[in-house]
Amino acid sequence: MDSFELEIPSKCSTYFNYLWHMEIKYVVLYIRNKQKCISDLKILSVTKSYVITMEELGIPEENILLNYGNDLYTNHEKYPECLPKDKHFYKFERDLLISTEKEDYWTNNKLSSSTIEQNISKKFERRNLNNDALMLGINSFSLIENLNINKEQILYKNLSNLFYVITGFDLNNNKINIEGGKEILRKKTRHLGNEIYR
Image (cartoon, rainbow, N blue to C red):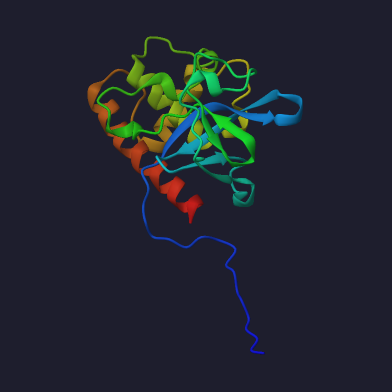
């Protein structure tokens, strides 16, 4: 009988670049035998095909790649009782459920606040920022400060400093700063997602 050696790589090697964006959402674990949901707030990197739960920066082994399951919860009648009925959830392996925005976030003219849980967006000090400027500040925060998402309040000063460090622009309602910052954050977010995916 012939024998052979099988080598399985520990990482996926691909040079395909996905269109990633960041979201701050509750990842819900459904415990089937107890019909119970446990939710945990996570920063996610999202595409149409995958979701990565972001863990501590610098510890890539802690990031978890999830595939959208075949059984999408497209109608509320199929939802487990413990899920809120006012959201659209996708089912992932390991009985994880997430209400993600699969469409490419960065192609929209206006940045959507639907990528952030509503009760979490209230933690960010808005001052006089319009929605696009605020969302860019929150995206800057998501890229760098993911361990501090559970703080009571995230000050405007923190958002402004992080936005400046990443983009070189001041965080305000100036259209040039918004467009320039948006382009830089888009590239950095996609690069980070693709690096972790690989």
